[in-house]
Image: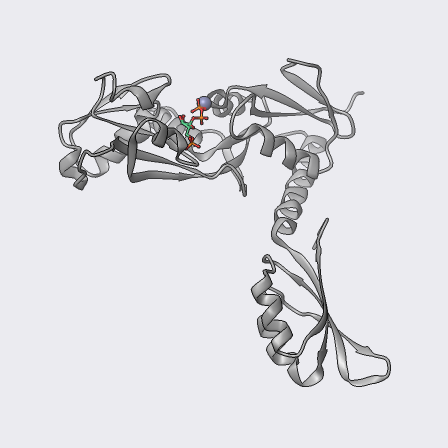
Length: 298
Ligand code: PRP
Ligand code: ZN
């Protein structure tokens, strides 16, 4: 019998597409995808990638059309509130927070318009593509405002006279700037999330979900990690240990012919900046070397 294949949904084109594919590549997946094809075949893993609209990902996973999905917390939370409002259960399961796709859902007003918290929201029209999240935000603060639900191009609604302000995703802020809008309040901080189907998977599929999770963990750990090597006087070891960012137990190696000096090797789980290297040198370190970490498994 053929091995059952996992189906993973990712955003077809948008802010999450490239980082999602990059993550999968770093997890060792090789895919072949014809131009404009909506599904890519995993050549070296029983895992296929589906390219879909991000807003469809929670439903596809919840309804078990796909086993896994990579999607923004903004989309997930909007779906969660929509399901709650309709009295439906939430059935997708969040497996991991991912270290990309950071953005925020924010309120923004036309430049030059003053903003004074809830008083500036009361009785106003707010345009958004996130009506359920916005409704929840307003309700929690007992603010009575009109939600103008649009399917896109939210940022031009104030200029068209369709709304007084907007509630939209902000990443770099350039869309707001180009439309003369000013961000005034954050409704939700977002990042990418890996979700899975509520359905119990057959053992072989489950095994691959576990393996993928472990690889994702490894990829996320090494992104910031560095391997650092240096020589140091034994007397400075304590201070040097303190200066090494996010390293647990460095390896200390004696140096042939130099009884007072040792070599120190350590994995730093944070980036090592020039300032740190300068401080290490001041503490007596020499022959400093910082290397990227490719893979990690603990
Ligand atoms: C969002 C939002 C803005 C833009 C903001 O759309 O609607 O248009 O990104 O990004 P910036 O601050 O970097 O300019 P997105 O690309 O997520 O598309 P979607 O909402 O249609 O999925
Ligand atoms: Zn979208």
